[in-house]
Length: 314
Image (cartoon, rainbow, N blue to C red; front, side):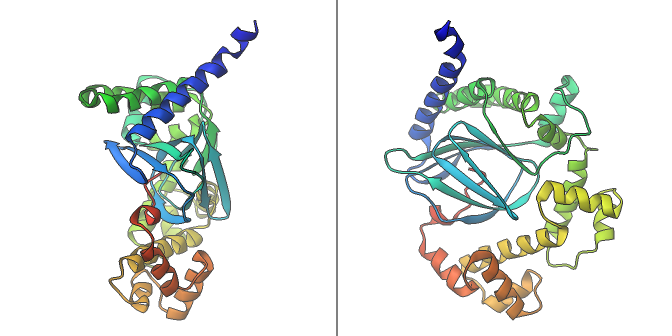
């Protein structure tokens, strides 16, 4: 009886161990690589700097080590056997916080495609109801049912001729397991064109495309097809920020990327991302990143490329 009771746990750990071995074999020595369309893997033998970036909808699994993701004033930490789901484009700060040469950080991520999720929803219903509030970022333990297709997807790295035919089939299975799992409501909302999440996502895309412009709440609410107060409430629930805070983070993330490239002076970069006052830009930049623009950019340019890249979702 003892053996039978512990079999699911043992099987889950065995699956996670094989996932680790595949990631260790195929991931670059340090940094991330896209190993098949929409699938990224990453390894790191040391903890990394906090790196900013825009994270698109994705599912990520940590196989070894630990990662920290910061969204607004919320901090998420997830370790081996845990998953991250990101449902909309979000400005986040990511940092590997547990990694060593003996036990490197290992992770795999899959881009979440709304069209594929919608197709699954049309073919079969995965529980839940439309009243559940989807989250922008969510974490949960990966079940054996979810780990199994992730393992089979990674096994294709040893048989690359399988990827074109079997890859999309296994990707659909991963999405189905997510729809049936703890974050089913959030993943389901990604694929529903009329979900609250999709409405908020439309407003987010508009802000990203017009990040240097002045925001008008009524215009954003119209784009999201919601009343102003309803839009504000749902936007904050998804992003953990107000629209103005969200825009500010987008501007500062973009400014940091341009400064690292080193192609323009600080005042020009601040103006291009929407700041009219160089002093306000420097003040808000320093408040967010812990150092003035010039010093922060110089420090980041001195890092290896792998240490300063957001590495997608992993």
